[in-house]
Length: 103
Image 1 (cartoon, rainbow, N blue to C red):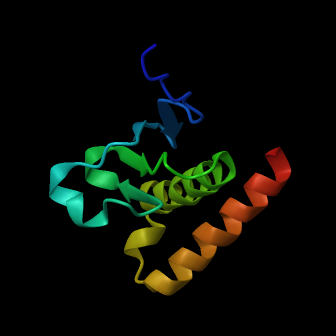
Image 2: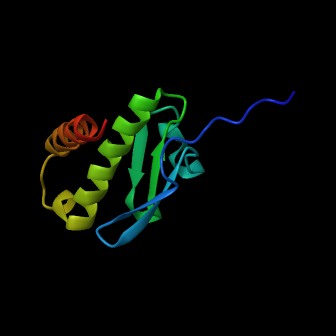
């Protein structure tokens, strides 16, 4: 028998504040330095990358984290001068809250 295909956990796309973003497990070549990271939000490409080698829980947590980065980007918060450390705290805290609410 052939190798069984891994079941997809996350949605293929998501709409965030009126913009559709593709959710993928393939990182674009120009962002290859992030290959192997948990996740990455690429605003100008309308893309959320999530590493599918992680557990289901970790994929959802990474997805919610990057989803919040997309909200920050779409709402303009990312461009206000708030430090990257604060943006990360907001994303991680929000991701944990969403995961606890829905899982």
